[in-house]
Length: 114
Length: 115
View (cartoon, rainbow over the protein chains, first blue to last red):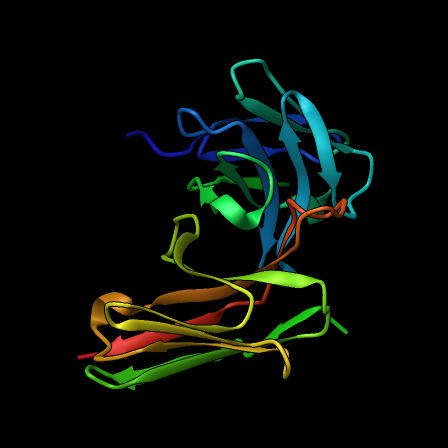
């Protein structure tokens, strides 16, 4: 059974550009969450999607957005990149929203903003 | 003050030692308590999952939750070099709230088990 797949694995972007990251959840999982991981702040929740609708959003500026498609695949977008956006972006999937079913994480996309 | 506090370590122990990892939290709404293990260049992997207070054992791993003290622990018995990783505690709220799907993580503890 394939795990959570995130593409690309590594990305280098210039300040001011925008970037789109992709996440394919485990087959049958309908909930997808995104987290940002940095050495200083640790893992921080960005947002969660279920049935193509954003259910929860963390405390990040509007430059961070996402969407979910009918096949449960999800993308997140960061516009007007800043140096501080350099981080590991992790996607997690679950059967349904909420911690009851447990979340499985992908290996992440390492974004470097220069 | 952060909702979840975890000693970042690093923690270095000899092979075979018992390891104790801990987190404290301040939000009484947390009902789900998890421990994740993260190897370098990998995503977090769910190790243990507990709902509400109590103990749970799985092989060499034991998770304890004390909601009255807002304190959770993970014990690793007979630690192995392959246990060397970052261990993250994570907590989730009960159903019904708008933040039901959000996990709040500790900073992570870096563990090294040397032969």
